[in-house]
Amino acid sequence: MKDIIIIGAGALGEEIAWLIEEINDYRKEWNLLGFLDDYAFDKKDTVLGYKVLGKSTDIDAYPDAYFTIAYGSPNLRRKTVENINKESINWATLISPTVRVHHSNKIGKGVIIGRYTDLTINCEIDDFVMLNIHVVLGHKVKVGKYSIISPNVTVNGEGIIGEACQVGANSFIKNIVLGDNVTVGASSCVVKDVESDHVVVGVPAKIIKSGRPNKSISRDDQ
Image (cartoon, rainbow, N blue to C red; front, side):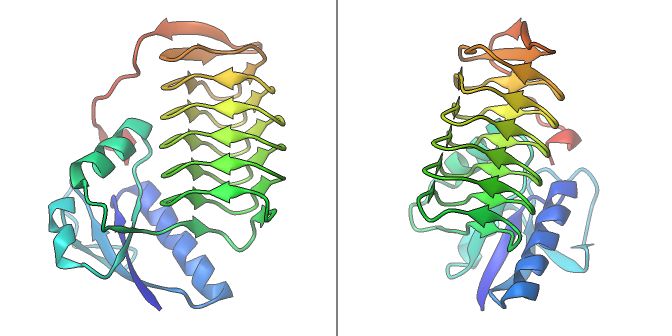
């Protein structure tokens, strides 16, 4: 079994710990050592019985371990990777055994795919993407680095999601293009291309804010 450490000890970190347990129930693969957390607002010694080992600056103490990022903000995911800035890091790709993935799909490093998600054919999932539970991606969908797709989202075939996008739960994305740093509000229906650095909400989705999403760090990012 390979040692693994989760970066981020909040609620999402707990969910990823559960995902690792689920993978091990199917096939013994990971030995979860615990968590590293830079943004712990409450002092924690353990999470779900696993140790909080320190901060991401302590990553060098575990040269042979694999790592996964459990922050629910695309910008914070990107910032964490950039701050670590080490090519030698082993980034784990975690895929629930309940996921259906055709062999034609390309999946990058550090990707997390939650239970009961379906990837059809010829999809491209770039590094550090998170696909939450019950996500459906049609044929030839592309998802850029650091993007997060929330539960129960459907992306039609040939849809393109740019880098560091966040798609809210229960949304539908037609076969259109989302630029980089786009936020889609929950339960939205996106039927037209969205340029980079916009927030869209509604049915059909309309722009409600322009400019880069808020980069502030809060408990909600964990």
